[in-house]
Structure formats: C-alpha cells, structure tokens
Length: 199
Ligand code: GRF
View 1 (cartoon, protein in one colour):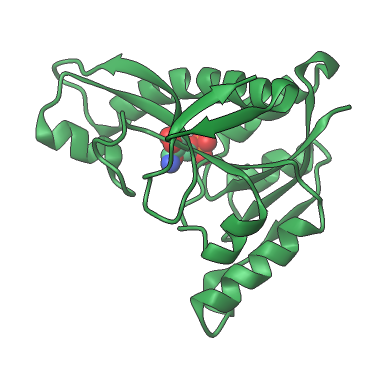
View 2: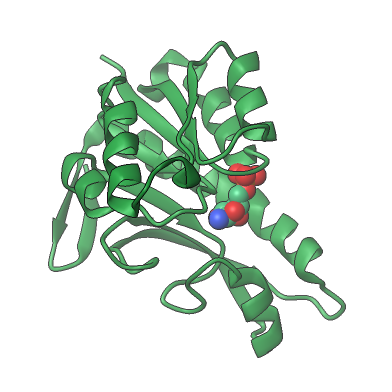
C-alpha cells in the first residue's frame, strides 16, 4: 500500500515537482494526497493542480493568533490522512499542535546545524564557507533543529551569487528529498538519541 503524503509549499515547488514525478511510479511507495500552502498564487500550487492533486491554502493573516492558524492548518492537513508530511520550501514555522499530530520532514538549503532560518544560502555565502549543501531532517519545535536524516554537500564556487549557489543546491536537494521520502514511505524509520534510522 502506498504511503500518503501531504506536501507543504510556499514558492516555486521544484521539490514538490520531483516528488510528484517519483510518485508516478507505483514502486516508489508513496502518493501525494494533497498540497498545502501558506499563500495563494504560487507556482507550486499550479504544479499540484496540473498533476490533479487537491490543494489548499492556509494563510496566517486570516487567523487572530498563531495558535488558531496552527489548529486550522492541522485540521486542513488531517482531512487527507497523511502518513508523512513533507515541508518542501514551506516558509512558516509549524506549530506545536501540528507537530504532535503529524510526523514531518523538512528540506533545508544548508548543512545544518550551520545556517538555520530563512536565509541559509545568503548566510553561507556571506560567511564565506567553501562547502555548503542541503539537509533533510525531522521537524521539531525549533527552527531547523530536528534530527538529521540525510545531508548532501555542495561546493561554493568563486563568483557564486545567492541564485547560482541555491540553484546548484536545489538540484542535489531534490534528489536527496525524493530518496529519503521514498525510503521512509517504504521502510519506515526510527529515532534513537537523535539518530534517525531508515528501515
Ligand atoms: C529549497 O531550497 C528549500 O530547501 C528552501 O526553499 C527552496 C524551495 O524550493 N527552504 P522549491 O519551492 O521546492 O523550488
């Protein structure tokens, strides 16, 4: 049986696109049941619609408090009964209630714990690191602090700007995310002392 994914997005959705492509092959072991966003009118939602996947948007500004938004997002995602939630470029911190209900993985464009937060690629460039990359991790209550599942390293080239570096990271990030989510869907996972074991 295929694991049900809900994918959360905020932007262009190339990671979502890679997951949708992988899910088209039955042997991958997962299906995108729905795609949720924190805003309307983004390319990622168009990708989902083109693939015939249900979408929803849950905007923080539509709720009086962050807790109300958290509850609404939890309810919206729960409708699709996911086995796993994938935060793929979702630019909001998920709330306590949400994380109590759904196992969630996030993909982040740096080698955590270096450069957490929303400007990871710029922060890595500004710092002057020669190697950066991407991390897929389980989401906990902190900002990009959850147990690491997989990482991929990318060299910073002389002359890189934020866009060129991020594009190179994203190519490797998509491959890693698809690999990790597929393994979690097919084989399960366990966490012992912050170490994530797949299968
Ligand atoms: C990815 O690099 C992700 O790690 C970061 O934003 C980017 C999203 O890209 N948080 P996309 O929307 O999947 O194309």
